Length: 323
Ligand code: SIN
Image (cartoon, rainbow, N blue to C red; front, side):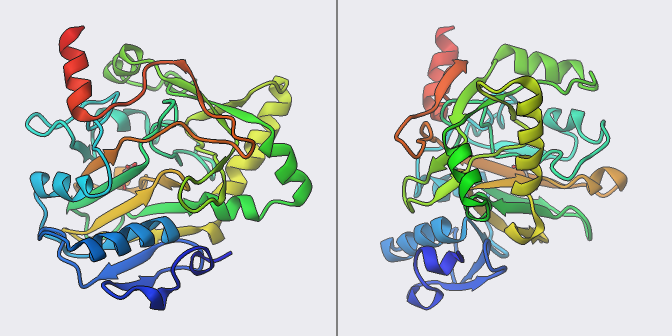
């Protein structure tokens, strides 16, 4: 199923120009200045394109932190920058995606496999952020691309017996350091301070489009509930590999000022590893929106195994003051 079969056909957008980048995922939107107030009809078409194309891109925008947060707020309530790794001092909603940030201290430490480092943002929480909005500031002249995959297309591509089998299962998502002990002390301290673990249906239903989604977030999904360890590992390896198949993906080449906005309820993404093989700097900033527990095909919902839900920046700061 292509994105245009799911929601608005390309020609139905009247207030934005939309150019699909692949058959299944990713569209560039032009003719919009995100730093200016957006008329409701433009905002609504952006919201439709976001659900249909799963990741949308705006080139050459002039956003600072305040304008970035204001744009995000048109689509939901911004979370704290990062529930585990913190936020910018003056902007609690903004997380710095710096090349050498704490979260990256574990990268490049193991023999990479096709799915290594692919993830959906913080699925170890009962309510992972529903959307992420990333803005490029310092971009390498080459290298440093980001990839996204369409998890609804991944579900559709399964056989009917496999669909029925996985729909009944739940995945256990954990925020933990890799087993090889390569993490730095500040990485370990951060994840121990806010332990997060959640059970999510392995197939979820998107709350807006109604699409079934193979809810596989390789870096966090570590176990299939109720299966024997060998069964769980074998099934996970198939699902991790399947969910990042090239034909479900889009690859984005950044320029300074570009903005990517993606739907965490239907995608996983991969931050680049090649940047660690060059001296080029790379700096982006991210704002995420408060999400809800996921719902399975029979109406069952996510459950927290450890940790509190990720709240808005305001609520998280108030809670932190109390403790
Ligand atoms: C992210 O995982 O949100 C960052 C993606 C990137 O650095 O390209």
